[in-house]
Amino acid sequence: MPQSPSAIDQAPVWNLVSEYPALDSPELQADLATIRQHTDTLKHQTDVFIPALEQSLLPDEEKPLIAKAWELLPLEKETALLLENVFGYAFMTWSTDSSNSASKELMGLVKRLESSFSQAVQPLHQFLIRLDEELFTYFLSNSVVRDSAFVLGYERRTRPHLLSISQENLITALQLDGHRAWGNLYDNLTSSLSYALPLPDGTTQTMGFAQLLSLLGGNDGDMRERAYHAIHALMETHQESFAAILNALAGWRLEVGQQRSQIAPYHFLDHPLHLNRLERHTLDTMMDSAHANRALGQRAYHLQARLLGKDRLDPWDVNASPPPLGEGDQPLSFEEAMDIIVAAFNEVDPEMGDFARMMQDNGWIDARPASHKMGGAYCSGFPKSRTPRVFMTFMGSTVDLITLAHELGHAFHSWVMRDLLFKETQYPMTLAETASTFAETVVRNYLLERATTPEQKAMILWQEVGSIPRFLINIPVRYSFEKAMYEGRAERSFAPADLCALMSEHWNSWHGDSVSGADAFFWASKMHFAIVEISFYNFPYTFGYLFSQGIYAQRQRLGEGFFPFYRQLLRDTGTMTVEALVQKHLGMDLREPAFWQQSLQVVEGYVSAFEELVPALSQ
Ligand SMILES: [Zn+2]
Image (cartoon, rainbow, N blue to C red):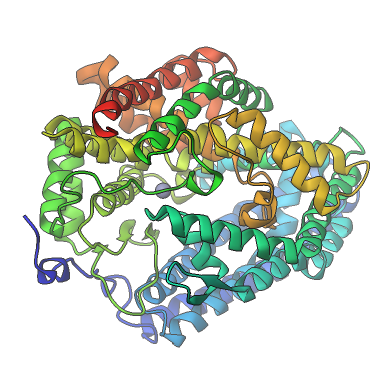
């Protein structure tokens, strides 16, 4: 039943007042004052660790320093928590009204405070990393630092690659105008690009780069093709700049890696793997499994092509929305969407359904469309009160319903960890999408079971099946391209034509004949290659996707026992490596192909279901 616009207007706005009364409230000012005070104390008191970083001390000289670490770590913890709390508040306020300059200013202020804070705690952390095993065990014996045992212990793995404190500081200082500048150039360049796009009626419309990219996700094939050619023209015009950015980022990282290789060799994958708490062996096994099964994603592309009335997809179709099928998407009210989610979550366990309802009742969801509201969706929260918040714009489509389920999945993940200490709740990107993807799958399967026409089923499955080539072909292309580029960059730099050739080679190796040609300028148009903070911003996506499919497979296998298993697994995501987590909860070794095969079997089920529907729909 079509809804009147007012039904959508009834989507809720959230309650942030429970955290701080206002941006300029005394409560918020008090937290800022505490952050400043603690940072000042840390800055002055961490000086005592510097001699220990420059020369080796005797255990008797280190013990008083360990006592100092016990004294300072609670201050560090409280400051980190408050920084996140205030930043979260500023960001959430800004997301619902981007014209609010006070929240933007507060975000800038918190970023500056955060930078002084991390510099202040640097000597303390380096001291803990450099402690020998025996002294570190002694350090952990104090209950004050119990919640940091995993995080600090894990940080110590970087020890063989640590440089002297003065070298580390020099790198940090040079980074600002060296390394970081290349990322700024990418952002500034792409945000200033515009193109006069020729429209079917003979007129032109001037569009920015982001607008052109968003057209690639639409359901109008002609516009997708026009946007794709426009993007290529823009990339070609600025290809020298884009190539300089990629060469410089890789060159900088390889040079720093060389410097860090004095005790043990430092590989360019070491840093991204460390951040993701993943072993190289696991990554290789996962990518090998994906490559061996690339036909699954190719089959998905072929099926999508049939529904689009083509023999095979063109490169501008790989992110297309489904063509209109049957009666199309019937708009839902927010209330109806919540009822579906609660019912679907209840089938997993009433605790999950009750949680979703509580999010709604407590006013922790902001879903009402509004001008000046930021696009996209996210889940955030306040570490002080340990309460999550979900942000999105709800317009009543099935895509919105699934987005709401996805973000509520994230919120549930943080909710089941709310009694753990703050440090124990920080999980890596590899595990961040587990609960969200799981929640999506639960709701999608709930809808699929209740869909009555092939058109309804196809609309639901298009999304599910569309994820397969995204995570099992497109992301691996990015990974294998980037890896080959780093391997080659050690010897030489790449001209734009070399980067296009390298991208095409890896594109074709993963796509086979499922797409008519390679997106040769993907290395320039994909912003992820130009992120400064982290390289290889790709493989965690494939990991997260296959991991959550593997978790979903346990739902059938464990039946009644599934929910307690799932809950405990989520609770452990902040205090274990990914391999240890899977070993503990599934008794499986991620370094072996068996785990990945099990996930791929689930994925194969979606392709087969879609395959059965397509012939009837594409006649
Ligand atoms: Zn997510």
